[in-house]
Length: 240
Ligand code: DX5
Image (cartoon, rainbow, N blue to C red; front, side, top):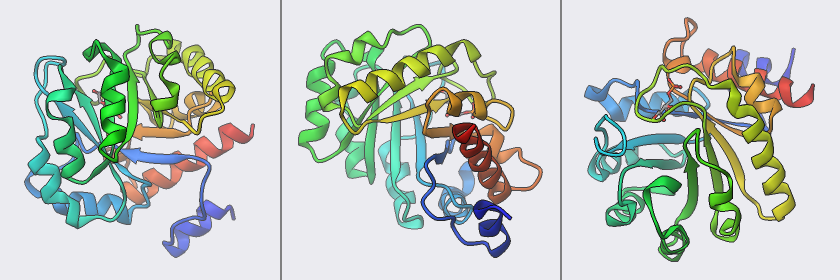
């Protein structure tokens, strides 16, 4: 029985895993979000990602800071805000105030990325940079001292349930190499189409923080089984 299987049988969280399984709240039941985040924590997730969308940068509209603030008391795991919004500087600090410890801005949405990241750090937050599939890693190469996480998108942002773009795996490998060579303690996150069929490729390429929405909520065994299975598959891919 593997450690993770043991954790499942006894319903305890496995000892620190080398990978983080992070749910996107996008597919959750919005009529009871407080209960939904509590259920995600009970299922063994490492933190929770809020996909914040403004209807301009992406053709979808989702969560304001007040929604996240209302859910904050219902879970103890960290929250992170994936800001798929134009002009993130305008509202991003409100997401820190709402209880998110990490703010992820898209490199494509700010002409002054160094200033944006500095502002997040000066406000006491952790900072992340998300890159759309077409965006080169070069956009973060000179600001790695200000970055706590790099997010390589494996879908075009805006909606859950999209197909994993496997041609991003060389980019994930390149990001892992860039981070290692920098010497900075930067997490490498991947988001989009992560499932039991695709997580091994992303983890083998170097991703250590894996965001999943549909794969968790559609899993026939429920959230706990889904989290446990994704974690096991990612760990096995790392060890291979
Ligand atoms: C896209 C979103 C999705 C979501 C995960 O803008 O960021 O990638 O988090 O959705 P799934 O796991 O269903 O692809």
